[in-house]
Length: 253
Image 1 (cartoon, rainbow, N blue to C red):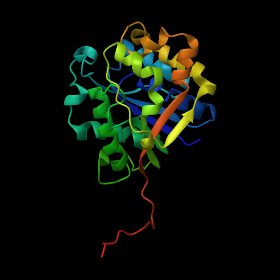
Image 2: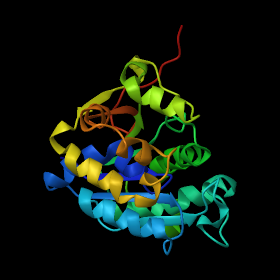
Image 3: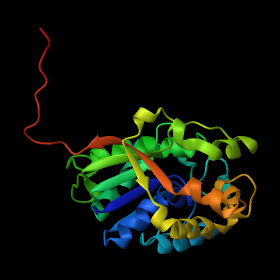
Image 4: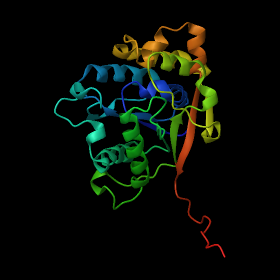
């Protein structure tokens, strides 16, 4: 298994969107880590994140400390992630990419996941920029020695894979923004580790105790229904490491 770095908007995104993949990689001995863009490192959600990452084998929290777009006091004195300059956010992510030196990076899709949260969108944009900048020595030179990951993937949901989850989100007034099936390049069966994935999701206790957040929705479902929702994870390949000696673009006659 290749080393893996997740870049997500909030504590709990890592468990919901790629918890199975993180657990599988960690079980195989791969290095895994997660960067979380919002919430202060001394907040209650930071403690929940630390517990979830321990369950998934993904190391310590790496929190950028911006405020959640909808909860300004999630990081007192810091700007909301969606208000912070994109290059500043990308530079902080580059620092973590160069420190972890992952082969694979995973982040949100271009919709900002099913619900289109503004923090997911901003994280997607910054992760794209950081993935390409991390390998270039003259970009963010203060962030460490250059490191270019092999590939960048977006966690996503195809139209055919939304299933009962779509109805559950709609019922609490959330959007359902899935992608055409052809946009999915990797479908991963994580049924062998749904117990760890669910434990990590439920470690985010403050979200699991509420009605509208997805951890809360999942916590109230019958076990079989919950298992069918979390047993598959979907990804879209967004970028690869430049390959020397590749094809040369030629002007059409």
